[in-house]
Amino acid sequence: MKTSALAAALLAATTILVSGCGAGELPTPSTLDAVHPTPAGAAEITSAPQAEGQADCDEEASLRPGPLPKPGAMPPGSAMAAIVARGSLRVGVDQNTYLFGFRNPATGRLEGFDIDIAREIARDLFGDPDKIELRSVNAAERIPALREGKVDMIVRTFSATCERRREVDFSAVYYRAAQRILAPAESRIAASADLAGKRVCVARGTTAAGPLFGMAKRPMVFGVANWTDCLVALQQGNVDAISGDDPILFGLVAQDRTLRVVGEPIGMGAYAVGVPKGSAELVRFVNGVLERLRADGGWQRIYTDRLAALGPSPGPPIPRYVG
Image (cartoon, rainbow, N blue to C red; front, side):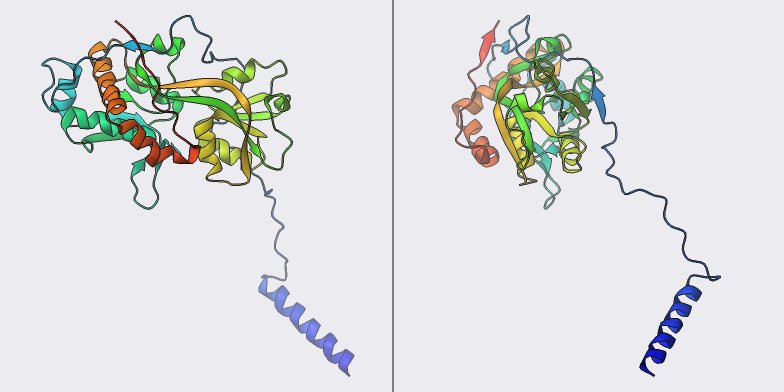
């Protein structure tokens, strides 16, 4: 009796299941595969860009600063006067690099070391650090944004190189960084030699690919639009490691504690403010702002607020002036 009752119950359940599918047919199996798509625009980089240090100029040299005018009282006819007349400073920045330029999800505001430097420039132009229009650009868009007049300057982990100086004028260096490697903590990647034959991600438009192409046994190098795209590619297993400046990499570690920064530096970066080519007055003004920040402790305050996770402050870089 018990066996017959159980069989009847199973038959009834099967009938309900089949009738619920419609016309007595089982659902058609899905033909979609479970995949981890690579970030949009990701592609292998096949030719070596110029890296820092491969120079036919003094990469860090900049014009000597002039005296800072009073905020709002810029020299007539100068680039600074035109900015003040417009009412705001337009700055190309990042919104995807934690620590340097990112959008705080709690406030919706862009924050970071670069953002604070940009606001200090606005402070000396207007007397108000909030008279600023922050425009998000990825690394590859920095020079076109200046050339096309979409922004007045770029403050976005922008390394001064001789190649870039053909199209852009640079301020003195305000931050120096070492290029290193980011890999999963459980991986066997612990040094640059371990990258041979591996897939390494960099942000397109940066100089990070250069040192990788200089290796005796180089990896495959893949470029994406933003460093957070590299993080996604690494998490999904589409690449084996990321290589970039160490503060950028430590910012990615803060978002994923399963990763670690490894190896000795394989390159160096010297961040400077980029302005349109032929903007000598504006370069001297920005250098005046950076001098003020060195002298009044502003640079150190910004470092403490934004980059303390990187360890003790190295102090502001010593500028190299010409002219």
